[in-house]
Image (cartoon, rainbow, N blue to C red):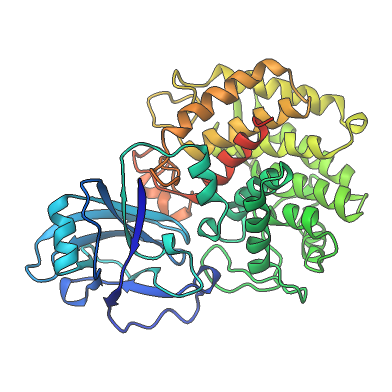
Length: 472
């Protein structure tokens, strides 16, 4: 049993949404501000009579660069019912608070008030409007505590509920939708079209927000964020917005390495640049991009791989390497490598990159944990896993086997990881256990090594890619 019950009405402060920002997909917004006197109060006219577990759910509407603590309180007595840690949240992230039966009764009778208990700017959550999916509006979920199965996961994943900012996050989702659409999964086909329509308009416009939630329409992405153009090239190879990616590849080419790079060579560019170049080359007819994709992969291998390490970043000016074997960095490098090779004709796959894929498969297998997942930093075994990094690594393995890039024996490793990842699903299909986005502001608390985890839909995209590759 899974039931979502959105609010029937609300009362919130009349704060103005920041002029310089724009909510994801133009969704309606509600503010959560400091102090019970300025609380956002949510009301339900009716809720089912059930003893099922209940959770209050909210979804963040725009990028934030502060830690928020949201108190959920009785609106009449002011008694605090619980606190949600919403730290450095991103647009589209889901946060939840378990509710007791008594607290559900409070919600029906008097509503629930949400306010900040720490000194931070207002937190903006998705409000209610006819154009949004019900599951991203404030609601109470009633369900058994069991995790979702594959069908429930796909039902949620193949919808606009999983929209992410149109950068590396949405790229994970779009690629997962592409993979399931190719398998003939009709909901994925429809969802893929819906997602692309929001960002890549029929008139050729590219509508998006930057990493801070500010409008950046028709502006090229940074080198880490070209990923959505891969799905666009595959699905809509004539779309005029592809010119932005082509131009950016030239403008962002670093003279020291003749590859796309900023001040650092970053692992993300295997996925966000090489893979995208290959997709545009093979589907949109820009054949000159294919050798550039191969070169991008080789530069990343030369600058980021050392002995028993895979670095996220390599500074061009000092040669300093940073973030050793971070699971999402490993996923970007490995997944970009195998997706680029998978797009290429079999006879054109370079032998040295095929060897690198096989080496990577053996290396990640060596560092996996007993439950089949990978620690947030692969060689720091006392840390929690990152389910998104683990899903990305599993996807790389499964895709590489499916396209005969690596030996079939690695299928078992991908299957083991996916089996464990399924236990992290909420009853309605969201993926818990995702390490928060690696924003500069989070470094002071070392959020990657902290025990803090979120529901980040990009993790669902990576898991969807792995599950699709393991599906006959």
